[in-house]
Amino acid sequence: MIGYRILYYSLIAMLILSCNKDDTGLSSSTSTNQNPVAFIEPELKPFVESFYIEMEERGIDYRNRPLSAIFVNELSAPNSTQFCAYGYPNLNGIATVEVIKNNGCWLSKNHTEHENLIYHELGHALMSKGHTYSLFPNGSPTSIMCSSEVADNYRVYNKYQSDQKTYYLNQLASGITTEPDWAGEKYYSETLEIDTFDNSIDGWESDTEYSTNNSYTFFIDENHATSPPYALGISNTGSNNPDAVGYWYKYYDITNFSNCSNVVVSADIIVDNLTEGYVGLVIDFIEYPRIILKSCV
Image (cartoon, rainbow, N blue to C red; front, side):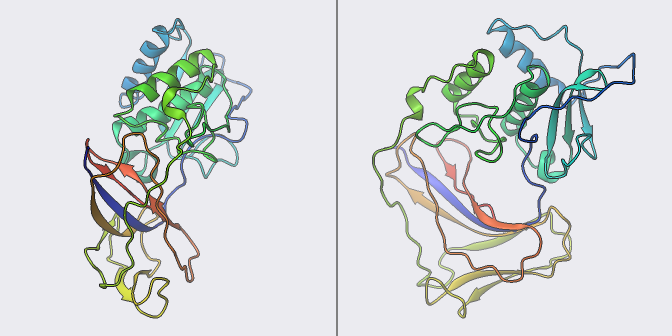
């Protein structure tokens, strides 16, 4: 049995929400530029090149179509402030991908998350594909073109999921959504860990990211405990930068966790006077065979 080490975070964050498009996923603007210039940022070029190669292996060649892939401070699409990136089949006469280069949208993401995002946007820009909303029985999206309403566009597949990546690229090229073996419904359920906070902090630790003025306070709350006698508390003065994150986290050693299982984390959360940002539970993966469970606040 493979053992997994699990890290659980509880966050209070002020982040720009995950990426991508309006509900149609498509945007077309009338060009006044008769000689549009294609430009691909050096940092984005490896992802564009790998996309070209993946599509060529599936019989599709996009190299002769002019494309721009650029970093921007603001997306060109109207009403798009909640998105991190946008793919346009025609922006000023050329297929274009725009990406906001800040911590929440790009700088804090890993290579595979970048790849997920750019492949999704190229699906819009080069293939004129819209969003999909369907899920497989195990909860995975049926397409990398999934709307951010139903899945995280950065994490449709991770770096260890080669079968999943192959499926999503095949589906992008062909449009076929035949259910793969890994997408079947899970028929069993098992509780792996329960933390009741009977022993106060009991192994939990606190930390911050992108916080410049130490405005987060971490404490044990005995007045609003949903799991008496203790609860973990975070307070914030509200003077952090927009990408600041404060969180509690804990490692769990779990040995009875099967590959390809769904992992569900639940918690009771009380929110007081939260006017910006969000609170949640995050699950994430680190190096194999370890898994990090993150919770997105």
